[in-house]
Length: 209
Image (cartoon, one colour):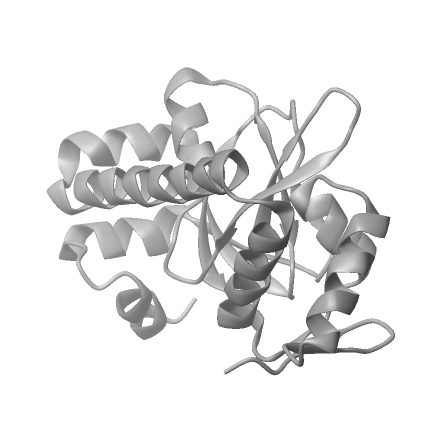
């Protein structure tokens, strides 16, 4: 792994931490669509994303998925950090949206670095805070917004992540928003008639300025 890339992605770490990361972390890759973490799976390492995009879901007992947030380069999977401390199992499902490269950090190192490096301590706190704020936004959306408003917010969020052409099917959107494909198709058609989007076979073009 290129030292310069790690420094660029995680610029606030102490010198010794960079050295230990490069020494102790494993570089792993996954292809788009691959599941990286399953609900109920024991957590054996922390995950720091180097390239690509990962999508995290909450999964209910019936196996239905609900979109939570994205993980981007320079970020850590907060779920794996939490589970590291208590040797717990995962409560979320993580999938690679694109081809990804990530650092796999041994469980023992996560706790050691908290005591040894202030920069790692602050990094972990920032990770928790960021994920917590995103979850609050998701809860507020569910509690206070109608489905058409939730869909618009969801699509705008996807545009920020993926660009103006969204490689999403109606069923994928319905899964992310925990509703039916029929509801999503009806609302998307309404948005298309309003000139906000253009619907393609397996993608959506965002047109609204």
